[in-house]
Image 1 (cartoon, rainbow, N blue to C red):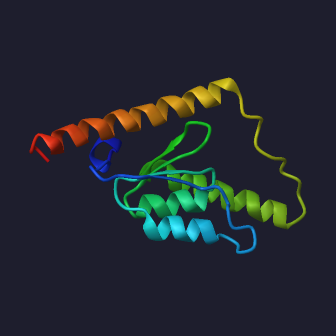
Image 2 (cartoon, one colour; image 1 turned 135 degrees about the vertical axis):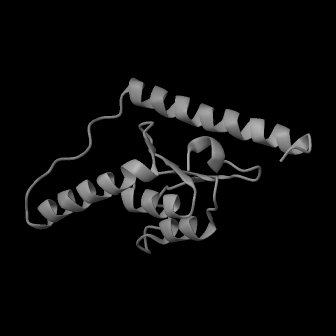
Length: 129
């Protein structure tokens, strides 16, 4: 599935904010439960992105990387490998600082999704969808 075919008229945007600090992954579980094909999930959480993609949603990280069916398995494998290293006591560091180019890449991806969604809504309004 490509990004153009994934967006549907009622698509929603879900943002992973880890809003439930007392229950591990509570927000993630709720996002996965509620998201549908064509929705956009904004998250840096690779496992959440993988689950969203399995449901047909699109997943975008805050740095502007759009996770795809093709890229998510590699990203998930790398995430799991790094998690194993951290579990064995190796300091793997953290992600690099967020730069203006990251914010711009995110804004560009979000804008593209919104434009495609608007086009689909217009087609539905015209009776073509």
